[in-house]
Image (cartoon, rainbow, N blue to C red; front, top):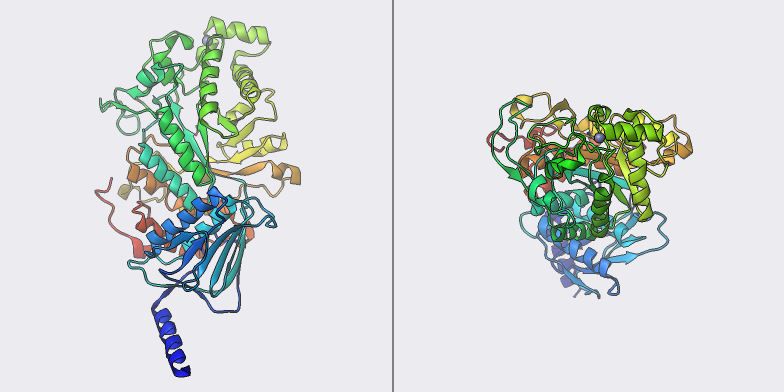
Length: 542
Ligand code: ACM
Ligand code: ZN
């Protein structure tokens, strides 16, 4: 009997000898990983994932974990509200004792893994850590999970990625795939850039011409404003049902969708449909070129305000987010200075016509606030007597954000220097897909410090977090969009999540290489400059 027992144990450990092991040092690096005494957990086909049956969000978490394990490790685990004895249990629980709202703890023991979060969102991040710690395998071998205690929580509450769907329209399926990437990197905000000079992208029922006219352009300039037009129609609109579907898809993954309607500049596509809203009355055409157009909304025209309020009303119905992003960047004032309505408004307000934007921003903010929501704007909105309740997205460096934080505004750091993923990732631009320009290697993203050392504690508290942006003037393809954000999103997520004193680029580099196996598993395109062993020819991919 004893001999039989011995040979079974030997057999089991031999099986384990062939099995691959988890590596808990994932991206983003958890704040604390403590290996503990004890035998490892062996994940096998008999392992069951359990959750609190009363809680729908925990059921969704359990299904996510099962899906992730099946995809990476090729093990199909059962999801149940009770455990089975033989294969071990991964138990998902809520633990109100965990201090941070998005924090989680994982403990791995011989027969039981507990993933605990203060909220279901915390549990979701614990699940992301387990998912990324698994080996990517081609058949469902057992996985050995060393005994450990992990406790983790994010550095910042706002961890965002933007996607510009105006310059190029991306299908719903890709928007979901992008949201999957946001989740994989423990981020919680999808900033959706839905309007610009070159295309309007969201159905607004009260103003149907936005879908009929503003969402289509008859051609696109080739290259960097070469003056040669491709004369090929480009367009696309997200219906309100599709928007709801995307918001729900994101919500299930603990991601808030913040819509951006850029105003009062970057509005040429709107003017093409509603020319009476511009200073000259048009005619206007949806933009074909890149850059900044001087035709903007006529702020002296009272009609623009109810028009924008109608749009805001529909956004509020569709997006549960606390914030509406009102853009506000790059608004030339030339047309206002020559417009009798705008100059009259400036005189009445006792301000220079060049300062009309802050009058406009305050008026829009008051409306948004009256609906119980708040605005975010690019840092140009900082002029004038802006209400401190407006949140600033600092893109022209970190200095505007620092100034805003000191003035009492909440701030999201998204500087062109470290967070513009439309820039080249290498100086060898000849072998890259065409980009807008610039140079932003992974390491520079990684080294971004969003909080000035000189800040007072109160100013520090105003830095809500960090976001990177994917502007898509030069990105017509979904594969190219993936290539531009990966692996820079991996570097960004350690800026957003991991304590600065734990960051080390060489160590990150190795961990990101393992993460790239998961990118392969899902068929994502990604830049490989960091890793010789991953380099392939990308010619012909774009
Ligand atoms: C911006 O890049 N114009 C916000
Ligand atoms: Zn005007």
